[in-house]
Image 1: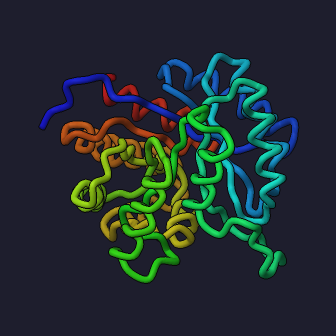
Image 2: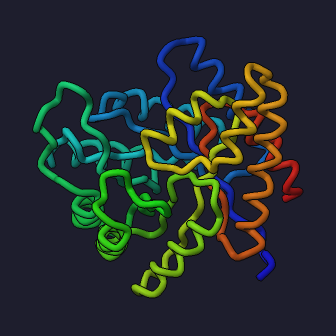
Amino acid sequence: MTQTHTPALSLEFFPPRDIAAQERLVRAAKQLLAMQPKYVSVTFGAGGSTREGTADTVRTLTNMGCEAAPHLSCVGASRDQLREILARYQAEGIKRVVALRGDLPSGMGGDAGELRYASDLVRFIRDETGDWFHIEVAAYPEMHPQAVSPSVDLDHFVTKVNAGADAAITQYFFNADAYFDFVDRARARGVTVPIVPGIMPITNYSQLSRFSEMCGAELPRWVRLRLAEFGDDKASIRAFGTEVVTELCQTLLDNGAPGLHFYTLNQGEATLSIWKNLEL
């Protein structure tokens, strides 16, 4: 099935920690506006550790002309805190959020907050704000690292969608079959919302290896071997990474993926190179 419509592209950024990082973020965002993203999302630190930074970054990107979607996590937050955040975003005209369970920061112990799961958060947002927000949730084609089995993980995903989610963004992956298998299984369970593949550009082998270990994304052996062989040759890593990820994106789009969500890591060049290769 070949793509017949223009796919919806979206981008993820994280809140910068200092002035230099803020400047890098703005520079990358300006570069990536050429892609005309449908929206950009902004991450939320473990236990809400970047709560103000997320809100500030959403304002920055909104002022640059993007629709910005803050990530919202229920871990470590009370209902009153979540209610206050949602009211503030409503007052600022924000219409889209990414609802996640989130991670407990080290040292937080058992204080997971009043809502335990992302499905609880989705339900809470709907109860508090009706249809004001377009709600995105996460999906894990290769299974959430803390799930006990693929079928139980799918159960959790279906519950999140049924709680009121409008669309889903997947964890990144490098095996297109994992994505299509997940979508087929979700559709068989009655899920009809768009499931947009998350795309991670390859620019740094050690960083990618660390991220993949943490989030349960499989880095194929042949890719690992090629990347390891390049050593510290950053240019070769980028060129190879762009080729691999472009081919993955093309396969996804040619076979019906509704769009692509790029994890930019607040850098512009790699995502832009892939987008240019795709000739969208």
